[in-house]
Structure formats: C-alpha cells, structure tokens
Image (cartoon, rainbow, N blue to C red; front, side, top):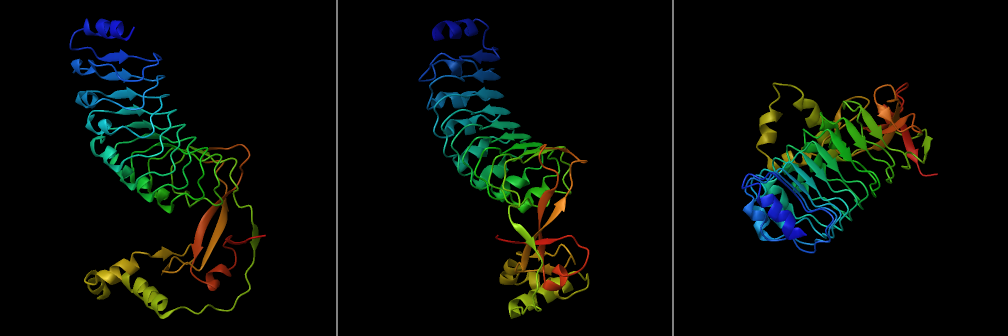
Length: 323
C-alpha cells in the first residue's frame, strides 16, 4: 500500500507538492520521501511513529507537516532543518519535552499545534518563533508559562485550556496582536492586567478565580528597609530628564540589576522594589470581547506600594486573605 502511494506520487515528477500517508499504521517513515524535493505538504498523521529519519530534514521546501496522533515522546530534532516550515501539527502524541534547539530553524513557523500531549514545561527559547500566529497547547500538563512566550508579537491565538496553570505572566500585556486567549480549566486564581490588550475572545471558565475573601486593612504606616527607601528615591529621580543619576546608574551593573526589578503602584504610579500588597480589582470586559458565559467580572491582579495607597478612598482595589 505505502509503496503504491509513493509510486503514484513519483509519477507526478520531482515537482510533486503533496503526499499523504495517513492512517496506515506506519511504525517508521518509508524511504524515498527525500526524492520529492519540491514537496510542500506531508501528512503522516494517525500512524504509530515514534521517530523520524534523518533524510526528512532534506525537505527544504516543506511548508506543512502533520505528525498528529502518533506516539512521539519528544519533538523530533530533524524538524529544525525544515527551514521553510509554516505549519506543524503534533497533536495527540505523548510528548513530554521539547529541546530548545528545535526552535533554531523554525523561524517561519506560523502555526504550532501541540494539543493533547504531556508537556509540563516550555523552554524559554520558544521566543525564537517570532512569526508564530497560532499556538495550541490545550490538554497538556503545563504548570507555568515562560515570560519569554509573551515576546511573540505576532501571536493572535493562544490556547492553554485543560492544563495545570496557577498564574499567567504579567508580560502577557505586551502581546499587542493577541485576539483570542483560552485559559479554561486551569488552577488560575487571579489574572494579570490585560485591559490594554485588544482581545476579542477570552475564555477562562472552571478556574478558581478569586475563591478568597476581600478584606479591608487596618495597619500602621509601614517601615521600609534602607534599600527600599534608596530605590524609591532613585526611581523618583530617574523620571527627571536632567538627573545625574541616569549616568551613575548606567555605570553600576549591580545597581542596574537591582533597579530592573522595579514594580509600579497601580494607585500612585510610583516605582518600588518590594511588593507591599497584591490586590485585585474587578473588571467588566463582557462589552469588549467574547467571554465565558458564566464569567461577568474578572479579578485582575494589581500591586500597591503602601498602606497609604491601599487606604486611599474610591480606588476599587481589594486585598485578599485566605478564608
């Protein structure tokens, strides 16, 4: 059967653009695929493959590869040689790891489908997929998302439903082209601030969003460390264009490293180092985007720098205490 399919494809000459070997219970990729240098699309889905031959890396014009519903336990290393690849389907495998070197040759990738695998971790090198527009990671075992993922500026759809996520990186606010975000059925308690995103669809049902009790704080004025006092003074001075501290800080690598951990108060806008209180505010986004039916107000994570800011009237921030 396989030989007949390849023979039929060969009759199309070296310019054959598409080959499908779907659902043939293949345990290895048949030889001869390298004889189709003009191949643009290859489907090997619904088989029993666990590895790829080295010769597959010679398909330099391949744009779409479907390896779904096989038994791969890791993303094959040979894929990094497919420099023209735009769509890669690896859904329905047993993938637990992704080698960081895979991303070296996949700069043109637009779609990556890793649904229904066993991934617990994404390497930070995923930021190299700079042309990626659609990423599917539903039904895995992800416990976190690297902040480097948020540097994918062309990403418009991100699917992370049915995982084990507790938090989402604050940096997701930088994903200016993100239009659909799916976070259903995770363990997320509070969402980061996403109000500036141009989202059209947000799905986050079946998360323990704010299953805690909002409380008011009664507290004397806090006592800051000398390091915190110095950092806050420097942050305030760096807002002035003629401050001599600009030059001094740039020349001190240790100071740069410390000050790079700056947070910003949601109430007064001033910079600080140590988070005083993690709060939430409730945002109604139903009028802005499609959202899960049973979600009306989203609890959005915010940071405040002091009791003074927390006790300021009318801000709508809530501290959270365990019941």
